[in-house]
Length: 204
Length: 155
Image 1: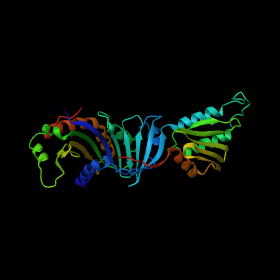
Image 2 (image 1 turned 90 degrees about the vertical axis):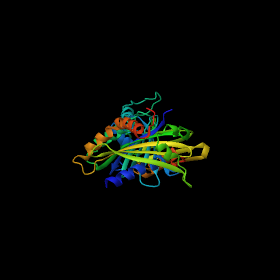
Image 3 (image 1 turned 180 degrees about the horizontal axis):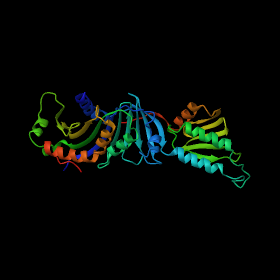
Image 4 (image 1 turned 180 degrees about the vertical axis):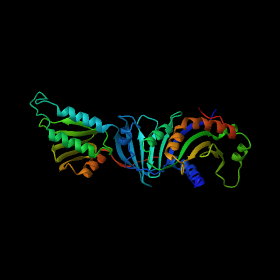
């Protein structure tokens, strides 16, 4: 059985005005659909808001240093929404884009993990409660894919963070838009890399 | 810098998927496009003829329509949801929210005055009063009361 898709997200790291980036404004800019109902939550631990769009597989988290769109629906392009947002904020400083994908399985599926990683994840030592293995794979001048597989006593999790660093680039906003627009490609990339590095079959 | 960003990103990626229980405050419900919908409805109500209820109602006062539009513009980025707009036979109008037995009514009584009613029989709440229409804080507080804004219980 393949590892189950759990959630994905697209994160834009930059400088954002949290009082402007709210559902009515996102609706005006056609980033959220018209007449969507959105539950608003303020973060008590740091400045920022979370917006849960009713009936749609997307949750927005807005803070002064990042905007994140998260979804639990496989195939949903969080990056498409972040790209739309950045297109209407061409002067906003953006430093990086992270396209993130997370998969999970019960520990008894650990047999599907290729050796030698499986052996590492099963290694018992003292009071160790979790074990992980991490690879970083360079894609191009600005993009690195970080792969992590982690096991505890109940689950095995695979996560892939495709990070594009656009800070200092000639046109950081355009490159950030392009990186966010690659979300679906990066999802497919995470499936390939999970298989190449850990022998995983991941839910498509 | 590159490496720091990437490591932070990777760490935050895990952390932010798991918000601790009780770390968020429910602020209310937004409705995208509410400003345009409410504006259109106010325009429609502004065109109601005399006797629109077949019982001698007055047309809605154009100054009340303008005051309502100003109020909505001031609140356009706030979680006001999508209120009903109800014409009143004396030429005023009111915004209404009703859900789960809870009611909030904001009647624009004059171009500068709101008459509010908050009512929740299950909590034994029934309050009404007047306040200036430009007192946005009071309007926001009343709407927050309607949504039951408070600590969200997650987890």
